[in-house]
Length: 256
Image (tube, rainbow, N blue to C red):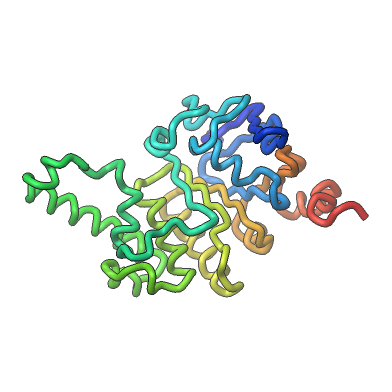
């Protein structure tokens, strides 16, 4: 088993609030790991520290054998980590294609000379991007692949979530971080999206960490879970085992 992501003694404070408290964490390549815990337990903070949005106050993060502690978001992205956010970050007036390609800046030539003067090369780059975007969307929803130039404002929530995941996948990451992908969706939509994620994982041999409050999702698609409370890891293992843990039950339900 190859360790893809590892955190050792990872800590983050916001004034007097300890959001991550000496967190030790290891992720094996190819697995889907559920990161769960009550609101405010440090799940999204962990994502933000790993992806360079927040700087760690202590500890170390390594990815694919390289130290990425306090690396910039761009450097983390280039190393092969992509993510989604709990709140939608789509630009609603832009097309499906444009929103997906925002996530592909690692491959795009953004120079003014290239885009204005090298028109044939620009055309080839555009066509390659279109083919990549279409192939990704087809995995989630084939009918949506024929609507790439429509604005995302007209899409239902489940399709918006699909487009956000496609945007994260367009750079061909090694690790995908999903922050509450079912937020704002119905139970049936959530079930459908989780099937899509499992399909994408199998086709792309992806490693995924998913933050999710819907425990049915965690039970169905994860290989293993890590449970946080007040920034500390309180349990780790298969969902059925951590769900039966007394500390986990108290964290979610409170002391009896």
